[in-house]
Image (cartoon, rainbow, N blue to C red; front, side, top):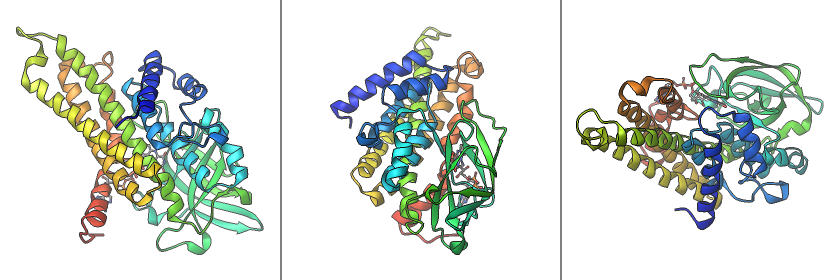
Length: 373
Ligand SMILES: Cc1cc2nc3c(=O)[nH]c(=O)nc-3n(C[C@H](O)[C@H](O)[C@H](O)COP(=O)(O)OP(=O)(O)OC[C@H]3O[C@@H](n4cnc5c(N)ncnc54)[C@H](O)[C@@H]3O)c2cc1C
């Protein structure tokens, strides 16, 4: 449940979201949110952040989404990259990146997905080899968001001596214009400000200090970033679901084609009520996951973050579907802005970890059932 501070943050971000709203310029919104301190609420105070956690950052994303102007890069820049650098970076890396990530003047993308590995991150082949004290990074990534607007991308690779078997990941900060680091935009059917890219890394030469944390710390370090990513994707989905639902409710209260508004028909009202309940339940699980994460329970947070992402993704897809339906033909017009959410909502079902991979996780980790793969 929200504390008094959380309520105040929610209200302040809602006001910012209302000033911007659907179709507004995301760069302006990013910059204003940064100046107001909302982008770095989770980052340490000594580096210009708000000293809070993912609980606070998820409120920022949820409320901007509910206002119809979600900032997808919040999932990546402060939540994944900011967290990993704050927890595992060297002092120099923290000095170099955290103040900018906190006030929004610098942005970092995150690349783990590879064309031949997909959901199976253990199969990633982006490889780092030592050349003197430098690293040479080679590989391919796909669907990486915001690389064009990010100052650098945090790339997940593996070292040459750990090329096969269970993933022992290592994380490298790759500045946007490093020679050998190329990007190609993917033609997505998504109406979003942030583009997705296919990346090629061809012997990208990086200094020793491009490596974040320890090359042997492996999965622990990676999951320090991936749990916040799941919690933030839940916030993204809940915000979008709330936005769609609010539009549908407003329409259903007014639109009259018999002698009462359509919202009086239970065939319209009940699915909207169900969508509301599902979104509220997903938010409770998201808050649990964020609380566990912020209090240092990485294992507990992992399970809850997966379940929250699943619940929020499903609740969002259903809320958007029902909202579109509630508006009849208007649900498919550009003017009402709901049809484009049909594809946008699906992102929360597939990324950063798909619905099925979460069901697999719960089957194996929580229920102790055997694996099929
Ligand atoms: C808009 C968008 C933005 C993204 N941004 C980023 C980003 O910034 N950085 C980044 O690294 N990645 C990003 N991604 C990638 C995203 O994380 C992947 O798309 C996702 O992890 C799924 O991988 P895949 O697309 O290769 O699907 P696949 O792994 O090929 O899966 C295809 C289907 O098969 C199912 N499946 C696979 N294995 C199993 C199994 N064992 N059991 C049951 N079903 C299974 C999946 O659930 C899915 O439905 C983004 C994706 C999108 C769409």
